[in-house]
Amino acid sequence: MRNTFLLNGKETAFKPGQMILEAARNGGVEIPTLCYLKGTAPSGACRICLVEVKDARSLVAACSTPVTAGMQVFTDSERVHRARKMNVELLLASGKHNCLVCEANGDCRLQDLVYFYKITKPRFAEEEDQYPTENENPFIVRDFSRCILCGRCVQACNEVMVNRAISHGYRGAESKIVTGGDTSYLNSECVFCGQCVEVCPVGALTEKKAKGMGRPWETKKIRTTCPYCGVGCQLWLHIKDGRIVKVTAVEDAQPNQGRLCVKGRFAYDFIYSEERLKHPLIRQENGEFRDASWDEALDLVAAKFKEIIGKNGPDAIAGVSCARSINEDSYQMQKLFRAVIGTNNIDHCART
Ligand code: FES
Image (cartoon, rainbow, N blue to C red; front, side, top):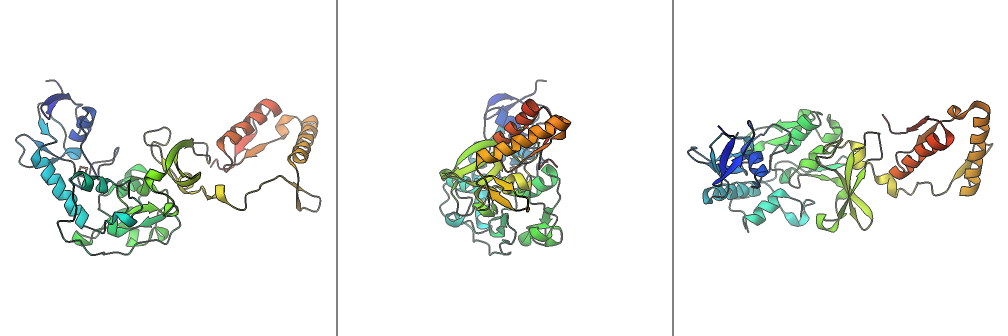
């Protein structure tokens, strides 16, 4: 039997083992999701991806239901939309989803669904805040009142980054995403890679430094390579008025495939530091530095290099380039050492 199924009446190919969601997307049909996180085991937690399957007793979650040959799937029926809308309304009532003051305004999957279903006010009573916002670490704000318990952060932490710092905790209405011992991120195993923030579909986890810096529609994204270690992770710099608002990973790009570490994601403040050197310094005989012009500093370095190379050859010199300079400068530094000075003794200060 051919591997095809009927998707909204149209014969569509699928691969054995593929879930309805993936097969539908390959077939050009978009199904909304909240908890689905590509590359991880589907949890089926949010029930936003519900679809109708002919002869099935109930609607099924497209993200966690495998396609079978000949299956008839309907993604756009009245029954499907009624159920999805009800689930959106329940999620909307599950916390304080006030978009006006939310950092995720304009980049929120729940907001998108509320808009799509034209929900003007919550049908169900809003739940009271159970847990205070955690704001004590320098990188990540955890606003539990906005958490929809989709579990994407848990999957990103455990299955993507394999840090295993967070999990689902408590039961029923008291459910919460917790660290070991339900302490703050700061006192937990969290390494602040920020992958949980990257995958949060709402405003429950946000970058602290980005707060108030710019709405998503005010920023432009510029792709670059992380300057720190030698891996070459691909980043999006979110820029407003020439300043970095936040950094996210480029999804599906090699080598990091949407992952970042704490340095790549959060350690960009040095760009705006008042302590950056703005001109060369020359160390004097008394050990103190004095300001110098570029000509003077470069002449001195060139003279010293010549002296060392004359006595001991080019391998007597080594260079260490700076992770906090721009990538182009690091490239030129290695070119200078390899092609001009004639040594491979060149490295990068953050290559750990
Ligand atoms: Fe399928 Fe959440 S995306 S249940």
